[in-house]
Image (cartoon, rainbow, N blue to C red; front, side, top):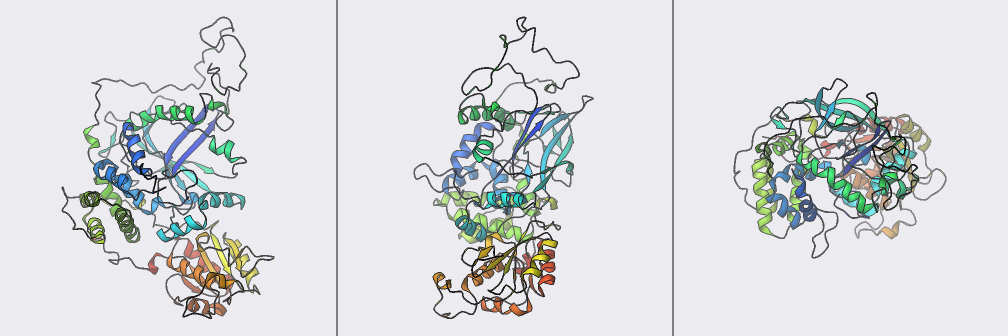
Amino acid sequence: MAGFRGSADTVRDTRGFATKFYTDEGNYDLVGNNIPVFFIQEGIKFPDIIHAVKPEPDREIPQAQSAHDTFWDFVSLHTEAQAHVAWSMSDRAIPLSFRTMEGFGVHTFRMINEGGETSLVKFHWKPRQGVHSQVWEETQLTAGKDPDFQRRDLYDAIDAGAYPMWDLGVQVFPDTEDETFEGIDLLDPTKLVPEELSPVEIIGTMTLTHRPVNFFAEVEQVMFNPGNLVPGIDVTNDPLLQVRLFSYIDTQITRLGGPNFAQLPINRAHCPVNDMFRDGFHQDAVHSGVAPYRPNSLDGGNPAEADDDSAAFIDVPGRVEGEKVRELSSSFDDHFSQVTLFVRSLSEVEFEHLVQAYTFELSKCYEQAIRERQVQCLADIDERLCARVASNLGLPAPAPRSAPGDPEPSPALSQHRGTWPVAGRKLALVTGATQDGVPEAKQAAEAAGLVPLVVAPSGGTGVDRTFLTAASIEFDAVLVLDAPPPAADSAVEGRAEDDAAPQLDPRAARLLGEMYRHCKPIATTPEATSALSYAGLPNKGPGLVSAAADAAVTKLAALLEQHRVWDRFPPEGGGDRS
């Protein structure tokens, strides 16, 4: 969201997650993010957060990053942003793939059934592939090697028939007068409702079976608007959502050159529409009739008023009373309790990554006062997090202004839980010139639903990557079928002075080293175990497998069900969160 066009896909940032439903009652747009809470509680602050996170105006850098003074100056002062900041400092802000990313409607919406009964709901997209992220070094390598990585991954998966799937679910709440649930104000977009309190009920599944035919026509020109509603779904008085209902239309008029953007094929409703709107810039419809108004007699009274059986959108009627003032409910004042809940719901590995992210970002700030102010916010969130970050920054850990609460952790907020399908995950088959064992390994990989890619010294029949073109970032696991010696072109990579005659191609050694550091499963056949030693890696340990090709693939697939081998590098503290 922060980067300009052309910035790398894998930077630490929030991702938008918008879906257009083409229904027989008109288009419905669910316009959200991959993070369930937002930076701000009211729309008037939108320009502020955008100005704060974008490149600083005097230098126009840094690009696509929040690691700079203006961002941290704003969020440390405007503390309602702290919930979203914690999510964006977590692994959720560096997703492995669009395919392994949750989506959220963020706001609370109102649903109405045929009997006129209403409920409040929050929308969730749950990836069938599981919620997975990259690690920090991996994101940096990816940005340099393939800045289009996530888009390429999505399109490649569709082309390979590994169709990405998301289940659409809703959390349902009683539509009470105070619009709260378990003490949580449902109209506050910086708050979420733990799934343990209100489970997500699955109501449908989205499967991506095709990619765009023309990127400009179908992606650049698509228009999303939270005001595109269909019967049965209505908005609430969430102050941020109310401003979005205006701002999206205003943006589209400017971005797409006039008011008729809804006539573009990608935005056009798949049902009859007669709204009597005419003319204006980029009008390409040829309207008939002479009376674009109602009531009229010149066009026979058409369009006629819909009858009771027709599905027209009608706002849920509700009584409105009270003074019109510019202020938020006192229930919006709590800026820290949900951040504490999120931090204490993370696994120990996720917590370590959170510490590293805060440390990295704040170390990029020039102003000492900004660092100190944000560290104070961390003290108000979680004293252990504050102590670790403050120590890393060389600052004293301040006392909290008020003691953080002790919420019951929400396991649903952690990515590190359960097992997930491995279909579509990519397996590197590293081999030498002979390619011994490749057919057996490929057959086993395909049977497990993995996508095998053969990596060899040079191109040729059956080779998908060469040592020159392969990169660790594109593989989820690796099987070394033999230990290939340096190829003729390996000298271009350079060699260490104390390793003038390596026994393993240095590019293969680098691939193994990076995958080992990134906690990815690694297997070797018995004939290739020397490759690990040549690469300076141990032969045994978590996520290291030695077996015949077909058995090795089976073991790798089992390891990939948990995404990575997190116990390869035990986090500081050994899991003690006290």
